[in-house]
Image (cartoon, rainbow, N blue to C red; front, side, top):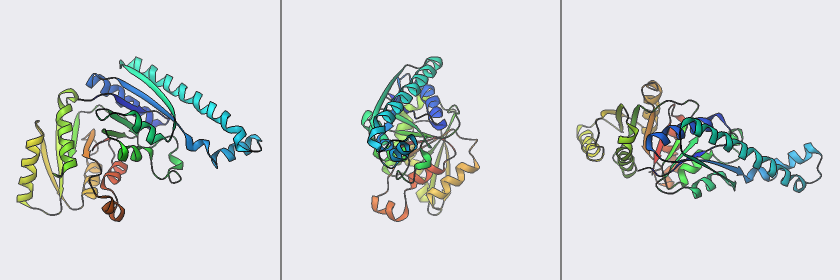
Length: 280
């Protein structure tokens, strides 16, 4: 059962698509949706403020910080007012929340384990991503105690779902989560995609037995062979019009393996042409 649906709103195109999904799923799950805007405190620090202060003729950036904060605060209120308007028009029960802080930390702190967070893949400050050490969506996905859905630049009703399943703990959690929302989500089809290192009838049977244990719905099974991140990316790109949502377990690798080989979760989240729902 989904608790609240929390949507990050920053004014970017992707965040308004996230709002569309939030409203859509609010109606599906009959749960309230919360629009969240965080004024990023990093925008109130040097060198960003120093540049603004210089452009406005201030001698020190401390003189301009309160003014910039006020402007950003008012902008956030306007964005949330627009979000609330869209919710009313879309028939969703909504509320709004605004805070100052590090965006990912504030969003995670506002969430409960039973909630669902929805974020745009690319936010309004995406051009500064290298400076900010990664995207907000990825930071939230890593830190969150609840499921996180990451969307791109277009909205589609969720009719055809694909589940990435490898039999490990995180993918089992993903299958169980899909099972729990299946009745309310009402997808027309479910495809289970498993990537094995090499073809093995024994391993395939083991995976089929596992998924049948955890997913109590009709599904189609597909096996691919090779590296999971590459095979999943390629399959989704080749079949992007067939599916509306990818569900997968999040960050199941050890941190040491991630440092050496990179994170499969982050790779797929960034490369997927369809929304990704990440389950811990």
